[in-house]
Amino acid sequence: MSDFNNENNNGGFGSSASGYTPEDRVAENKNSRKHGHGKIIALALVVALLAGAVGAGGTLALSGAIGSDTHSQILEGVRPNTTIDVATIDTSKEMTPAEVYAQNVASTVGITTSITTNFFGFTTTSAASGSGFIFSDDGYILTNYHVIEDSSSIKVSTYDGSSYDAQLIGYDESNDIAVLKIEAEGLSPVVLGDSDNLNVGDSVVAIGNPLGELTFSLTSGVVSALDRQVTLSSNVTMDLIQTDCAINSGNSGGPLFNLYGEVIGITNAKYSSSGSGASIDNIGFAIPINHILNIVTSIIEDGYIAKPYIGVSVLTVSEETQSYGLPAGAAVKSVAEDSPAEKAGIHVNDIITAANGTEISSSDQLVDLVSSLYEGAELKLTVYRQGEELELTVTVGEQIQSALANEEQQPQVEEQSMEQQEQYKGFPDFRDFFGFGY
Image (tube, rainbow, N blue to C red; front, side, top):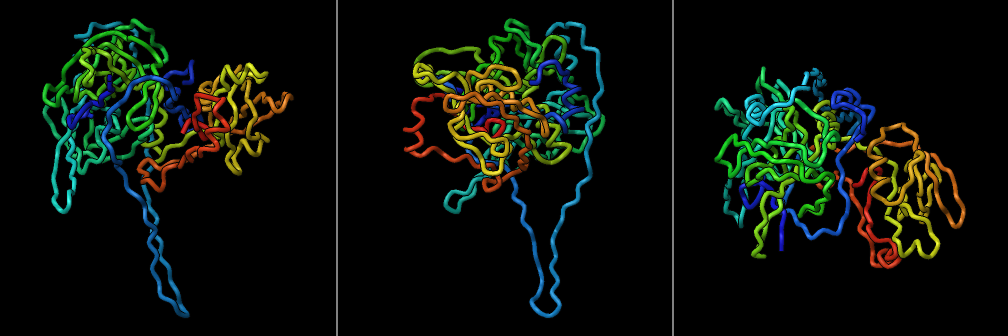
């Protein structure tokens, strides 16, 4: 059987809205948030990721005494506002891989983490390593969530030999990204590209730290496939860039560049053999930069993650079900109470056949469309309900999620009961989403 491995040194890897430029996305991130998302698929692929979560839960502290004069104290955090300034750079000149490396190796970093584990009272510490890249000149670093997962300390090493203690600013486990901060000024950030402007066959290069010790290595190849749907061992499914660049343990979190010197992806997984005897080479994957750019800017500027939200769970109407006279589309499995969808009149068992003038033939299409919208946007839906066609308008809301959430704070998705599974067995390809796929 074949497995996906993360690029972390403890057992694997170190681990859009089209038409907009990356600068537009950053400048408009408060009005239009685009997030990476996964799709449920039937692929015999597994990504081995570390278990656990990095995060901190907030506690509200109250103090006071019962009596005639009672005083209560609450603690309110105050943090300075961070604003990301965007400068445009001419990247119209195509370069050789050597030129891309020379221009960007100083923008690539090595990441080393310590993981402390308690086994029956005995404390052990292990190390893991991965890669990352400089996002801003004042020390914000991007990497994969699974690179820093469960870590008790994080260190960042730059090409000039400097080493920094890093603070975890925030992460989105569902998109396998994490934002770190080091105390440094005048760094050389990468130039962000447009991952929507890619074609199969385009040349790309990856810079990272394979095996955690072959630091600042370059591998080159091409884009092998786009929007490849890959399921991780954490049961998160992502649309990734497939590349034949050699990707190895320790490369996770490193940048994937086009030959214009722009980052168009974040390396996070590879396909490898596991006991099958088959030899599998050079099938690597990277997160498209467009899928996570607004999440990153939200973490840095706001301290939280905001996602478009309409409040429904949907599933694809199967061809078998369509043979009984039902239309193709996204069937509504549940509607969240007091959600934008409920207020618009969406009912369970409605079939959404079109949205904003675009035909909807699967749940994935609806998720993609909602993910490209923003709070306050109007979503005009064509709905099939018991033989009638209705036109309903949903005003998109926004779902706020802590960027350092513990389990209790994470949005919960209710699993289907056996009765629900039986009821919906005619609709394969089920996927839950509350406005955005999670």
